[in-house]
Image (cartoon, rainbow, N blue to C red; front, side, top):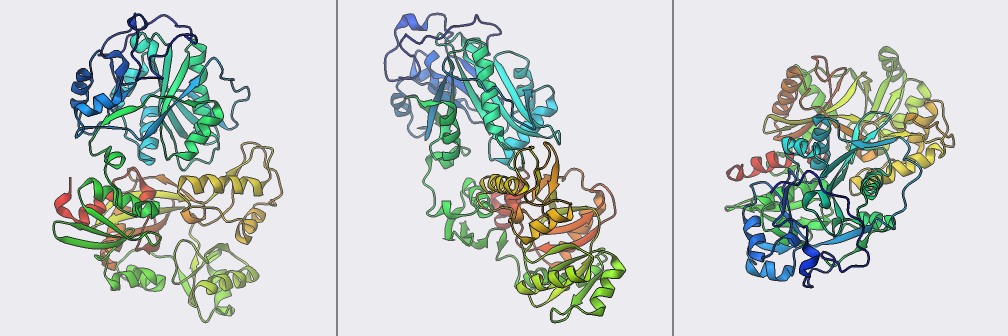
Length: 584
């Protein structure tokens, strides 16, 4: 059924027995008066089945069996859930999550709005597209935009987005359902769903601001409480909700055993949790296809994947399909430059430093190109790289830093533009993103060092420890180059770039640009991969405009991070390459 358009406001029923918090107790018939029967609400990503509105378990089972392909239906508040699952144990399972409740009569409203953040109602379809982007980036099921937009135009649903007031970017989303308007809930309840925060956001407190705003909306309507479901292992979310006053209830959710939910009910390979996000995304995609996953070294990101008699050993996106020759071509930037220049790919002017000694030739090269980038000829993750060197003293310091990582040091002309990573798998462009250096935003209160530490913690949480901003001499030098000291307090809303390299491992962020990527840039990336002879690679360019035909090759990565480009189907294309028979 569809949600009702209007219902009277319902005051809290604080002195009466609860229908939902104790689902194993029989509900007196008089408490069900005024409540619609067999209520199912389409959320766009699946359906909410309100179990307390059904008079028989068989009715709930029939609804869940009608779940659409690619959907995730949720039955919340099922009476006697063990009986429901017992009717079809091969089809249903109890979700390993907690249902938390915020009593709205005790909730204290936030008096000071979050700085630099605007939480507002969805006002256009584009907001819902952005909300889907954010959900996909954190591994959540996305919703059908047409359904979401139709829901938004009723008061039963509340769709909120959080917007960064500095950049205008949507950085968070949440959905609310008013149970009174949905089915005449005699308890006066409401619920929160699909809370997601962009992992690239620089703003703190996005999830809290969205949760508080939704709670305040329902409190203003006179609702009694707001419920949500959170996985038992999500300790950071649990801490946030407990801080806001949520308490556990006795209710559970029941779901179908489908491919989307498989990680919640099926046995998991040993040491799967040891994998970093770059290996985990591949493992999850392989498991969804029935590929056997054996974690051989979790810390190294190494796995053995087996399907249909074929076995492939991988380390993140580097597999046995990449030859030793191709890997060595990527590993030495001098070789990569020489090969691609010969293939007609534009390459920045460069100069090799002999034995790490800076002499007249190095200073003359720097003078001829203006600013240089100093980098180890062999290395990864931005280690030992210094950007924007233009003075002899700084050149010697930068060369010494690079020499520490590799005895072969390369000087390259610094080319203006955006740092773009193009992911090529099996000679096809799968994703592209502009990589931006770590940046902090002033709040008028904390000094720059504190802002760096706070932003570093947020990046670390968003990437499971893969991205942090080093508070080191490089960061201090960049801050000083911008006319500041680490002890300075930036005015509220003022953005400051604190690193010059855009590597994610040093706190950089990414912005998808796949759709905007020009045809010449796509062709150059594929030509580079083909020239190197590598099946999976991240090709880096400096470009003034991702939609234009001007670009300069920077380097090729033999083990690009597939997780960085979500929701692009990077892991899917990688598993397609390894096991073509499982392609969907």
